[in-house]
Length: 141
Image 1 (spheres, rainbow, N blue to C red):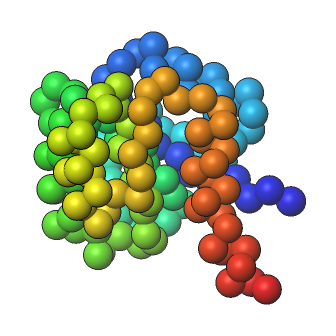
Image 2: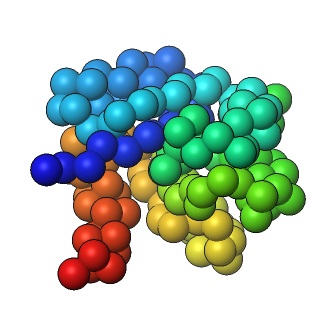
Image 3: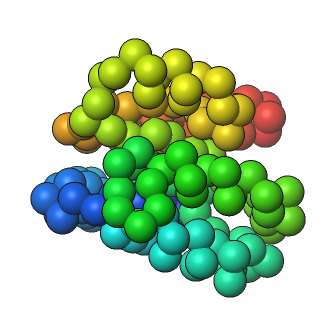
């Protein structure tokens, strides 16, 4: 039986949000899904829910360029309280940028598990989910 995860998308692009919501819903990829328009709102939610593992995403897909609080600022603030989260959170940067500076910066931040270039497709989401679940499957053997 496939384990369903809690997924979170932090991105100000409404078309991107519409597409990922459709993919996740149509392919039953998540138990719960949150969509946030900027990092500040997402950060506030995570702070409020940090002791509630059922309301914390397993994987966050984080855009770089957003108004109010961008992805880099979100990560800087998230680092301050990640150790107090009720469960670990895996973060993937998602951007339309394939700028080598963004890729390099993402590689230097230990909280980032990967960098995905938009548009995200079903195959990308399935790969991220499989990569997340694989170590858990191996631990249970």
